[in-house]
Image 1 (cartoon, helix red, strand yellow):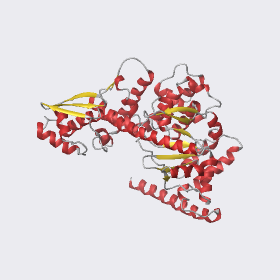
Image 2: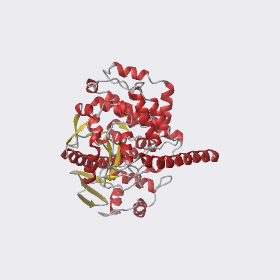
Image 3: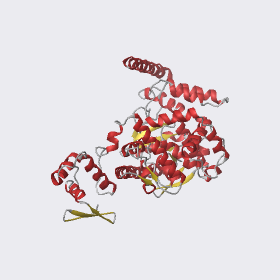
Image 4: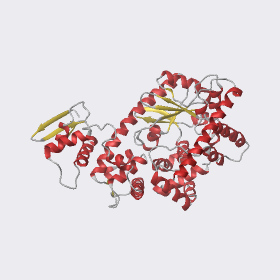
Amino acid sequence: MTDHYVEDERSVVMVDESVLGLSPIATTILEAVPDGSTVTLQAVTEHVVRTFGPPDDPNSAEDLTRQQVWDLAAHKVLLVVGDELSFSERRAGELAGEERSEGVTALRSALRHLRAGTAGTWVLPERVGPTSLVAAARAHHVVPSIAANLDRLALPRQASSELEAMAGRQRAGAKQLAADLVVVSDALAAERIPVLAFKGVTLAAQAYGDFAIRGAGDLDVLVPPQDVDRAHGVLNEAGWTPAPGFPIPGHSWAWRHHLQTGNELTLIGPRSNVDLHWHLVPMRGAFPDFDALWRRRTIVSVDGHPIPTLSPYDALAHSSGHAARDRWRWLRSLLDVHVLASDPNTWHGADRPLRPEQLLSIGLAVTEFGMPSAAPPIVHLAMQRVDPGLRRRVLHEQDGTTPQHQPLSVPGINFVRRLRELDPTPSSIAEARRLLSESLLPSRFTTHELSPHAIVAVPRVLGNRAAEVVSRLSDRQDSGRDR
């Protein structure tokens, strides 16, 4: 907001060269928030009530004020700090199971309407409250996608305003990520380290043509395995420091073990985190090596900056596998798959068959959002792989999901799942050994082991690992008895 004029209880503001006329209540709210200050919702509400008196029953002064604040935030007149004003976020945990399910079902329907590109406006069903829909959009990480298409969705004013304001905050975060990605890319390029960015703002730019449409998260970059040590040092110098739970480069057994069994580590920066990968996924045989991915790379524009990333077909394969590893809990993941699979250019680069779990992701995506026009035969076959039992399980998980990743409570479950995905080839024996070593000796237990000798470090790590497994199993048994 650059200018603010008040006359006869009304006011006019100028935001981004646009002129907005404000109501008396909105004007009063601005009076309660002096320039450069932070004011609580309670204080703003009290000021409005003192000016206009309490609202008629059953209206709530706080809820009505909150709605006005969201309207002002959506138009960039006010900035919402924290989540205090988010009615849907505050109430999401209070929603009953049926309300949550109806909100997710409505969200699926809205997304299907948007992907179909059909004429007309999608209308929120009467039985679904705006709180349920906004909570579902937030849980499934599609707030910016919904907010960008409000002209095609008939939503209550509360939902539209809150979605716009939340999307504005997420877009601001994505813009900061895009700026940090340029720093990361330039720093590595200056040292002649080839790097491919993927997921996050890069995938958003590649699939949707809008780097901020998937919201904000972390930065994921892939470098050649032989350059991990150097890349780690370059990012340290650029301002990103090692995260707890990972060994640092050096001559220790712990570092060698992590390079041999893992595929990524995290570095923490003042505004963003970087996940530094030397293999695209934990299953080494699931994707071509870095050199092949680099030869097939494409360049996308992320907020006006050219960034190397995966080819469209590799991005589809990776997004499909990533969605499967998350058990298809988030609609955004399936939306990514659907968008990539719907682009004919994606299939021009097909150089290898998709894996079974990747095909299931494509099948679920087209089941939810519709069969793309001119889809290749493999997409139709993928849809046939989705049996009713799998779809019911996926829908059930989506109804109860949360925005955050929940850690698996059963020790070793990741090892078992990855073992099932192994191809029956001679190389799978070596892959199984690597997966077993990673499961028995996870990196978080090796961080403080500085010895270069496995014979010294491994017994200590195994002892700590065994103690943790026993503790977690004991906690599960105690929890079961309490229920």
